[in-house]
Image (cartoon, rainbow, N blue to C red; front, side, top):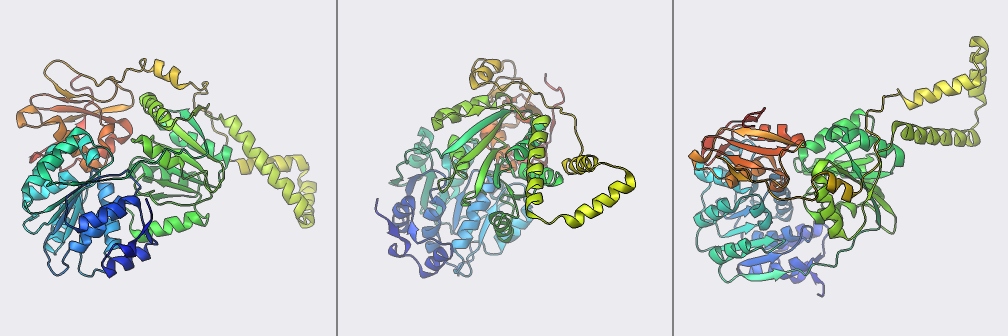
Length: 558
């Protein structure tokens, strides 16, 4: 497809100025196809992957329909996670930079709802939110849809995966019939086409042909680790390989913050990047990373979109991505401009299945590696220090230092070897006991066999429970079991609980394990390392209009 410039798309001059400020001249393929169709008022089914520019593809024609003088809600965009809602809202705001009077509001769980209500009353024209929180506002009657002319569903297939189908249908059914319905999805499962049949009118299908998968020239390793040893293993790899710049990927904002704090506490120059940062904070972090003041950038997938730094020498998958294609995007941050790069992935327990899928998708080899021992790291550190010492001896006049040391040696009767050893010891820091299991690395086949011979069936429990099984056999060491005080008697379904957890905590629905429902209560499994974050996010949350209490199961129901 030939290139199309934005100034050829008959856009509002104010939007063109904003697009130019963002550094874009040519539209991406999905933008070139979707913008004219949406500008005509047609319903759209857009099939495009993450990172193709689809936010601008629907955001630009959406803004052209907004009347800044009308201080009423005019458009609703639904996103699967709060992080994506924030990201989309930020980009739409940048596109509306010169459209004075246009207000864009992200609404999502975990944020003060009173503040959201105040903003809605203040004349917001566009809301971008998660289905769960939009439904919450509908129940409170704090959103009014009578002036809405456009609804957008971004990453619709992901919303279905997270259990939001019922919420999506409820929201769509409450919107004015005379409206434009735009849906973007990476895949087109039957459920997506059913939504289109029920809620769209003669939609135009806009599709970007998926490019041939190209995996960057990157050496890829994986390490079998325990959750509590991830930080230590990562620090050993940083010390062993000493990359100039590194990008570390985590699946949650909480994990980003915790890892940055841990790395900074160990003396590394690390900064975090996620959806909660204001634009000025993001710019500061990225500028610091580009100029090398920050050596380690810890980020979520959504926040890392658009990172383009040539000197990144290593990528760490601290958490394995939920989407196979994200893996390719992640490791593509290194090995740029003809350089070679290196990617490290941490595998915890039965995540081996996920890694096997990634390897199959990439058609590449991810090599098992043994975790470096403390002795290995110490030897590398010593070599680097002594290499610097030799360089200093050759390049610097040390006569003044020699005089000082000779005087001290004569006074204290130390040898030069004693002094050199003591200085090296001081530079190396304290010796720690090596508490990490130094087992030989296991291949994916060996790990697959160890964790159950490749069985990936969803658990199905008999008895009184109504279960939405997780991806793995139960019980799982890496999962925490949570108790919720509602069940089937309250007319709650597994999808309602899945949607609430995903919407409020930002956790992808794929990460949630078994959901076992009984008459008056429910058990749900979540990754152990995310359990506290889920409990915090679910405080004061309602499911189907009912107040809930969630706590760790502590053996209940076993």
